[in-house]
Length: 213
Image (cartoon, rainbow, N blue to C red; front, side):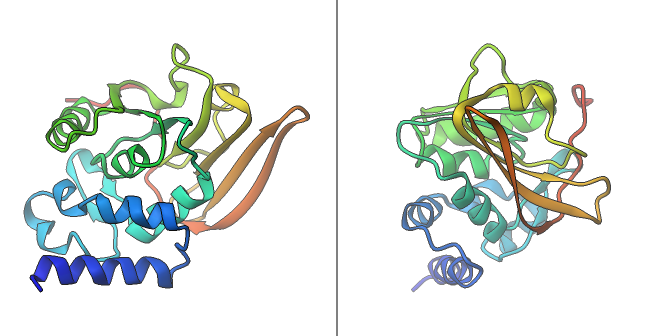
């Protein structure tokens, strides 16, 4: 067995041990080679269960946290999903194996261009990536069945809540600092929004506006 194959098997084992048990999510993560999304100095650590730095001062999230967030989102094959915070593109690629359509946005155009190139190379034709202010969502494509936010806001942003369908689910980190954040799941029904706190996490902050090139 090659080093990469062994490392990938160890990563899948780590995912299960951290609580990622949904079969469809595990299969999507097995299909998504994290090595394609980690470039340069940290490439040899792509299959470790740890966050890693990427360009523009951002990070590629810890795979077990990606798995738990994806599992909490309960994506079905007919869903249209919005991801806020494209980053490396790793999370969007996993979602692409679970959903009908994935829209992903990031404030850093450089990250969006790099992610698009990987999506194209891997034939992930159901992902559309935009450089835009993620805090405003994508009103032109709303409403969404599922919304996943990979940066922390003090509260769930109003525009994103408004773009969530009745019956929809949003998963995001919230917190007033980078040291105290909670992962929450928001469900919307006819009566309004319902909030469920899941676990402590650490994410980069959700920043308004476009990033500098």
